[in-house]
Length: 189
Image 1 (cartoon, rainbow, N blue to C red):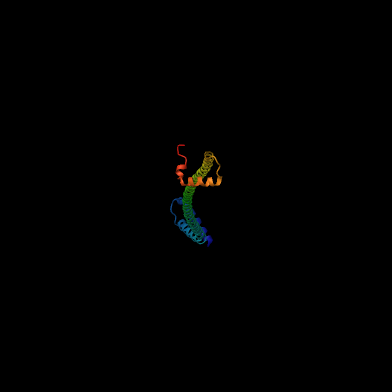
Image 2 (cartoon, rainbow, N blue to C red):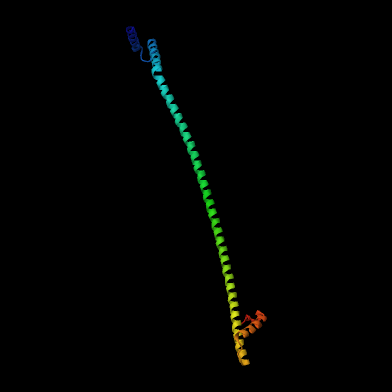
C-alpha cells in the first residue's frame, strides 16, 4: 500500500513539475487534505488538549493572581483607613489629655492662689491680733506705770508713804472707772 501511495505521489510530482508550482493539481490537493486531517486528529488528541489545559491553567492562575491582588489592595486600603482612624483617635486623645492637663493646671493654680490669699489673710489677721495684744499689753504697762507714778507723786505730796497694796487698789479702781478710750493714746501722738 505504501508503494502505491509513493508511486502515485511520484506521478503527481511529475505532473506538478510539468504544470508549474502554482497550477492546481488534484492529487496534491487530496494528499494535502489527507495529511492536514491526519495531523489535525493527532494534534487534537495529543497536543491541543495539553496546550488548551495549560492555557486554561494559565488563565486561571492569572485570574487568581488578579483576585488576590485585588483582595490585598482592599486589605491594604482597609488597614490604611484603620491606621488613619487610629491616628485621628490618638490625636483626639492627645488633645483631650492636653486640655485636661491645662484644666488641672488652672485648677491647681487657682487653688494655690486661693491658698496664698488665705495664708495672707491669716497672716494679716494674726498680725492684727498680735498688734492688738501688744497694744493691750502696752496700755496695761502704761497703767501700771501711771499707777506707780501717781502713788509716788501722791506720797510726796502727802508726805507719808502709804502701803503699796492699798494704794494700788485705790488707783486701779479709779482707772477701772475711767473709760479706756480716755487712757488710750491719741492717734496724732
